[in-house]
Length: 207
Image (spheres, rainbow, N blue to C red):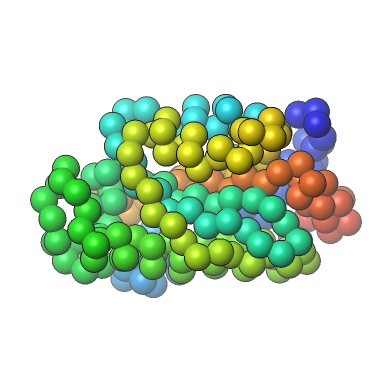
């Protein structure tokens, strides 16, 4: 598949959809934490799965990632990614201090992160499904931590083996007072990209 399967207009529509989805997802996170969450950037692009790593801040020695696969009519993967410090701050916001910064996250912390991922990413996918009119169902959330390159390689290994071009929707969000900053990543395979391409051209923009 060629990287230019989407026109500039297609990507503009998808970016607007991404903004709406991310907006609803951050509202869900804000309600969960009782904090104001801000959206900083939104990017929509097509790229090889092997290139996804360049969108991760390499200054983070360790990252915490929650992953969900998309089920139903689309095949894709959704990530909620935090640097280690942000993840500890987020857990502390939700359940109080359970471990020292820089040490292993406790089972309570892991469960909290998975619950956050479940609420936020399910909200994102539900909105995307409504906009595109394509059924999208999330899998159970999975937790992973480690070096950025290792986490990304593991999360997208199935895409890499198939040598697929993926559609990447990236959104950066943050909570200023507690220094929580994270990213959404949504990647779809080539067949699903075709479905979203048709939905984009049919809708012409967000409903």
